Image (tube, rainbow, N blue to C red; front, side, top):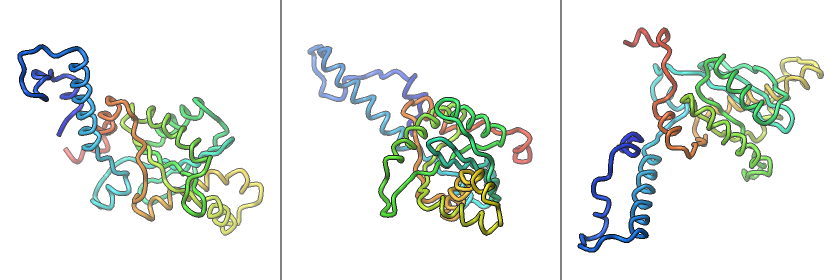
Length: 235
């Protein structure tokens, strides 16, 4: 398996063995082409080795697996709903009326407080399964959030959210929430529906949002630092 450390720090002692030996010194253009080929090949191998299943998949593979919590996110134009799952216990968390960098930093801060190590972001789709114009906006925000999260070893996944708003409204009506409460909490309950779908399918069908930066990919491979108290009984 190719590691980022090997790729970045091990010298390539024979960079011209891609072609038959020649007494003629390679031109600058040849050297550039060969070096580019080596780098592209290394990146492809690294990404191919990078398996980062969501927590639900890990839990299905190993019922005794112990890991972090999941933060569900329902991104809107003006409001963003958050929900949290700890094991199979899911609850609406809060609604944020922020945008841009302030929103991303607030989400990271809440994840840290709640000890979450993955984000499940609802991806809008139409009834026929196709992505919508809103999907592009969500993908853009998810990409920026993935960069911030990866620096901490946290992962970001996209989950189909079609119909979750309707499911959230029905859930709140069943619970007997007032109209005003429904309006205030809708986005958080929609995020909870995203998490319920994620868990009900054991994380199958989620899409990992992978930063392009190789150092961040390596941080994702290592994962977040383990809590010494939480894992002390495994030592």
